[in-house]
Image (cartoon, rainbow, N blue to C red; front, side, top):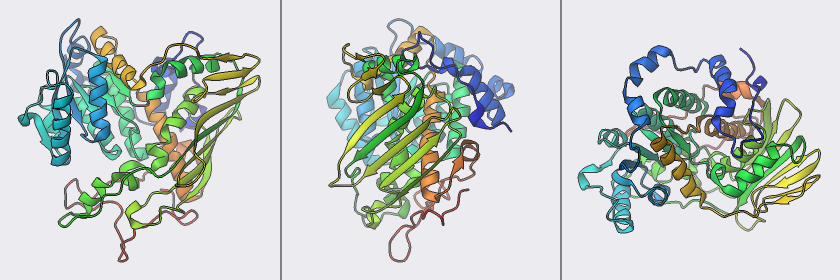
Length: 458
């Protein structure tokens, strides 16, 4: 098998402000073929039929698009608000979440938000592990996926097979098998003419698009190093265990603190930073990564099994290195920035949108709400019959984050090919309230935490 790091990318065309998937179609196909992930013609023939063609041109002009939400927490409610702001001709018609109280709270908030366009009835509110299947059967045209990250590959596959357009929040998976599934689903979406827009929202920010266009056009010369930081205070709220809760319910309600559900904060949060680094590198994978990480502050059992700091170095075939740091610890210096260092200048993306060196430039264009812009792109693609498919970069950036966790948890240097072929599947014994999660507390109530040099790469 050819090393995934040998893929050549065509991203960086002078005419592209936002590096879109079509710029990497040949490298992606080559990658998928070598990885054994191409969706076969027979599969496409069985699943596409006429449905994909009909949905590709559905709702031309002013037709109403019916939208369903899977994942009724704060992010899901925010996604609905953004979608309503993006297109006047949509209706929210169905809600689904594993928890009934999440659905009820979301329903009450959304009804107050826009009672004329939020037309969900109690009969179209679903709860439980199979709630997503019931929502897909209601006749929605578009699905907003904002559930716990662990479920995203499973739900995305179901949406695409059902012929639905999708807004897919980040990250798109928590392990390599999940990434392989998402890549299959995004290829199937292309065959069916369905849109998949990613929640990696900086790809839709005007200032970032213009800054990245210049970087990709060579404004700072060849990039030799990238520094990404996402250092913050504590994130996530721990919910105390209640009488009658099974271990599954406790962990699901505290999903942020469990690797199998969130991917760790290197995946759930830092993926935004890694996505901008990957964008600058032409959306092609590194050769290998190594790093360090640990858990110094989040030592209480209520913080599950995730780390509170990661530092990872990604090595690319052309000699470029990406230095990525993320930390969630209180009382420390906080910093969230993207620095690109080139042979002819430097670029600060996130806070300054500035290039200095042979070319001096700073963005002075219009501001935007990137959360709304990503939904505008979704609905525009549907209505125009020109689907948007963000599948490649959302999978690649998420896998970079997963790879980073692999090297910090194990203490090993791991190649891209090894990471992509990992057999580690972070799944419970069953998707039920009595199912056994992948990590369970010991007699002292503490959850086992990865130990570099001891924890094995699978």
